[in-house]
Length: 67
Image (cartoon, rainbow, N blue to C red; front, side, top):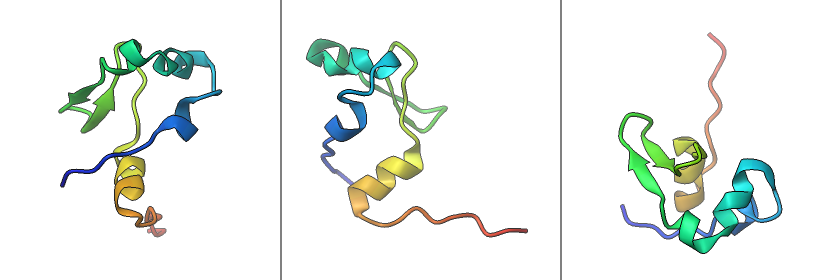
């Protein structure tokens, strides 16, 4: 599945480690980490795969039901 996501609302103005992602050149250093199963940046920032899937599909994140 190919999807384009606008992550600005999750990055801009948050500061901390997310501040580096506001720099376009740094943002472009994103990579897919096959072990984590998500996108990551050199400073250790990543996004939860479930959140990315929800953003891409518009489907809500299913909560785990109690055992």
